[in-house]
Image (tube, rainbow, N blue to C red):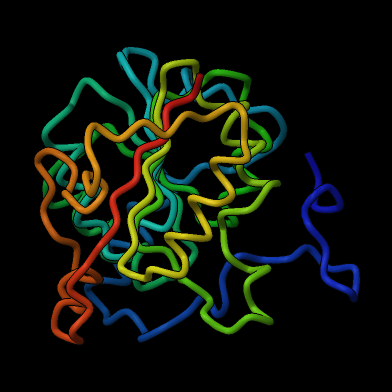
Length: 234
């Protein structure tokens, strides 16, 4: 799958779902671990990718899109060593932290994709993934930037294709507008079912949930209500 198949900007360039890639420069020790460890973890696309080749013995395969500092990804990988995890992140600071954590905690069931997650989804086989997490993504609050939000008909079509029947797409945010946006898009997608156990259930964190640093920041800034959606692939 090539870049010309991705959503385009007016200039004809592939539209990214993120802004800048770099943040604070990694210090010497971080950079050394990054350089030594990332090559063995990084997924390089050369065409269709069967995730089972990455995790031949895994019972399940889960993707986390935009893992940030990697707290949730590392926690889940440590709890479930029999599951294979693919983390997608483009920001060098987050990738550096994740690489350090993988090395420090000897997490052998994580692989990393460091480009636009949609590119990865487009190269995966049908029904090859058990679950996908999109946790506290950039809400792109300005109307003119809404086209950069990751949840869109294009990405939902790809998620529906790669998630197996009975699998789940998880979305969490503390931004009500983005939560409403996501719900409105997903309920129009016939491949997904939203069936909460009770009214307001979507405000309850996922089982075993530990707040990410983004969620903790939201609490400090007074955003006290979060949305935890789970959409089942029918």
